[in-house]
Amino acid sequence: MKRDIHPQQQEARIECSCGYVLQTHSSRAETIQVEICSNCHPFFTGKQRFVDTAGRIDKFRRKYGQNYGQSE
Image 1 (tube, rainbow, N blue to C red):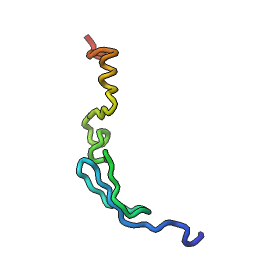
Image 2: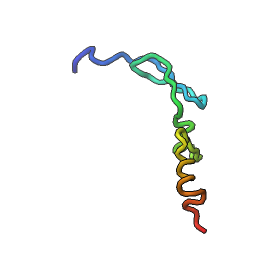
Image 3: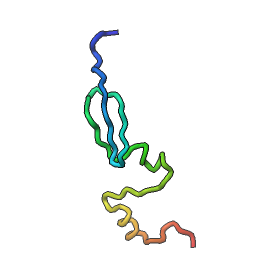
Image 4: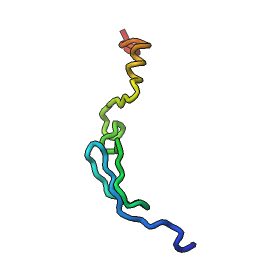
């Protein structure tokens, strides 16, 4: 194996907008800001939450109506 070809690993801090902080290793020694993590992501928590940044849900409801997919 070649020597001295891999970057140095240093301590890194990952901060989520929910307040969760994780210490890990990275080739960059810095603080990384993320919007969503495994602590607050709906897939891992089981709580459904819509993240609607572009108004897609409202556009869908205007196009198909409020009761789309509900049985009568």
